[in-house]
Length: 449
Image (cartoon, rainbow, N blue to C red):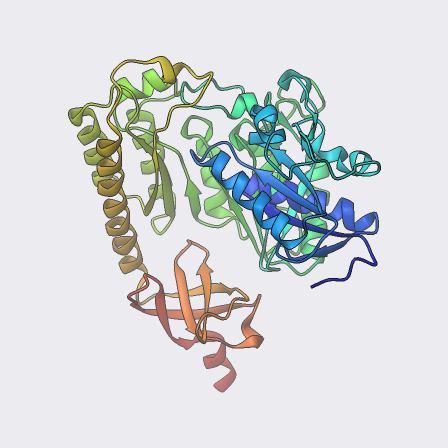
């Protein structure tokens, strides 16, 4: 346990890469103000929990981690921020142990709220804005395991998908300036981090709100073109990007780039055009198929991940099978499968054709099995190739793991000298845990020669 002679702060993040980037930035604010960062299970003065509204268990998860904090130090101050804090501040403030709830506008001002904060026996204090006041951008990046960093380039969303609360939790679409993103990328590279993952709510919409206005001063292509010129970054990975915003020029740039890696994550949500219209998505399956074909045309070994929702209102068995069959015939690499759950203040929550919960779970399982098949088929196409792997720091039962540029998970016996290093290795065999074992390191082979 830590003694509390100095100010200490602990952090826990729920949800997406964007949350991790923001937690990391807030942690740097606190350490810059004299706080020592400690483990969440240690005795700390302040516990900061960054919440998510996407999971259906947001309330339960928030309460669970408040209890963890109170167990570690009953006198510790508990601060809740993030999407769930913006959407349900009253509910969160009533959780026993919570002292402060900060909305989307206030979370980056945490230091000023901590100055006079006292442990409370009653409801926590709420500082929450109307979401249309969250119209500014705070640049963020996370540095976790020293192998990769999540770099926030965009926030908020102007899309009105009928199932989604993110616009209510994060506000309008707005972007960091290119100069700021490039500067952050240089800072990350200077710390010896080999990989940057670009993150945001809707990063393909990059450029909107860049200078506080609604116009696009720059585009996503401008952004990646500028990052492509930054020296010292070995790899840049694009996180999720909408298919209608992924243009041919951006795909071509990634294909020709030395730093951008052949890996896209492109949400589909449904393989039924009827459901895509009900969801108010901005494309149909024909456009999605076109984007997949274009990627494979210029990058045959590219890894493509797909988001899909099962159990959306009106998803009959026939429409679910449309999705299943569409995904089955696509040359994709893995799926992230989400079971639809009703959200307050969304159009979908009022729609007819509710799918029973057991049926939602059955469809989820079917698509998760399909995902495993797709992943193994993709991995099999990479076996026998010699590829660069960036090794991570974790020692798991004497093994270490890393990823190729095209996101194949690779394993080898742990070697401390390989951590955060890129080595060319031959991919040999898919293991029971789904990772791929390797043969002789090409780098070691060169040393012997």
